[in-house]
Image 1 (cartoon, rainbow, N blue to C red):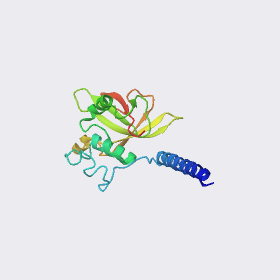
Image 2 (cartoon, rainbow, N blue to C red; image 1 turned 90 degrees about the horizontal axis):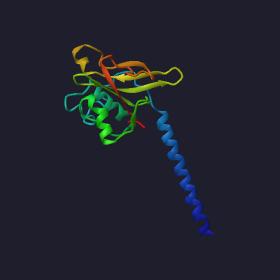
Image 3 (cartoon, rainbow, N blue to C red; image 1 turned 60 degrees about the vertical axis):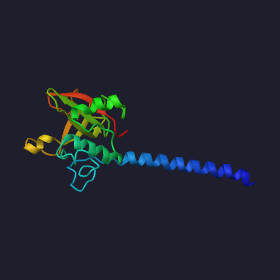
Image 4 (tube, rainbow, N blue to C red; image 1 turned 180 degrees about the vertical axis):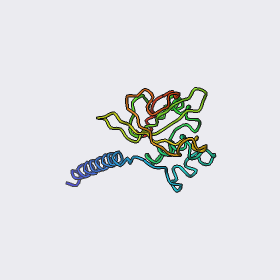
Length: 180
């Protein structure tokens, strides 16, 4: 009798574990909260050694420090993103295969641009309205140090734009799906 109960107990435990695990994955996907303000200085994903840009003197305001911190904040895991100029991020990811990538925006994806002459920009997809095609990206920029923009800002674009949220002189490279 006991021998028959052991497989039933094991099966029950396996089903419970699978159900709880699946629910926790679904719950984490549902708890994504759009960032609409600059992270506070006590947020460790942006203002600590967890973010490699911070101790190197390239912390906020800076697009790379922001995007790195935002991905870390969303996933709770140290990102495998480039720690160089924004223009390098897309190619770095393609070469190393850390995350899937493409031309279609997804919630939490890192949008990547290069500039003619060097530099680039990265931003994070915070919102997508599939019925209207509206998309919102969160950004920070090094140029905020010189007063040419806000240290944190949102840009609005259409998901079908060939250069979504970018300036006319930016070259859109694609999205890194670091949150998937």
